[in-house]
Length: 228
Image 1 (cartoon, rainbow, N blue to C red):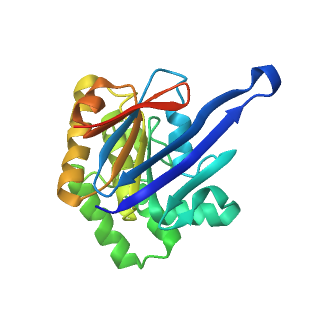
Image 2 (image 1 turned 45 degrees about the vertical axis):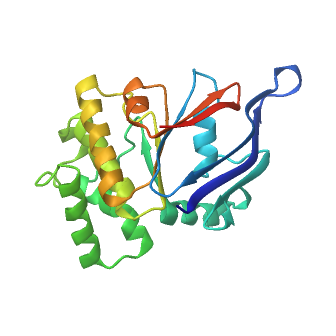
């Protein structure tokens, strides 16, 4: 399998002087195509910081993040925004949908920014709505959907642009256990059938139980990296 994304000696610190904390302290890890992997660890371990660095939402103090042979960590401004748009899908615990747009429009939005022709966008949105079990609900705005349905829209949005990797930061945190389990089973199915690469940051046992690989982080370093 080919490597989708790789970090090399990543380091990210917060604070100064005696309050300086290395949230990520020299982490090197690679994610291969088709993985369903979870970065796990206690609160404050650095897992969300690592995910943000991998996704280009934060920049490291040292180290590299390589995707498609390009160093995300060295990009700034429009270059990193455009690269994220075209290569990385995001799923956040707070859904982060645009409230004034319908589910259909939320899913379509990234493709609109990419300049995908209208007919192609429409077909892709309908395909995504079907895949996440929301066929016929594309006209509803986020406020008209349940939390689980909103997160399904977020999954569809993350997939719509056909990214190299989907990063999910605590995607089940705001869902009840039944809805969370259904969403995770959906993502696992998409991983298996569509070959999508998922990387989670989580302390949710349900995600850990479904992950094929667990990367244990504590105090900003990898303690254990186990494949199952």
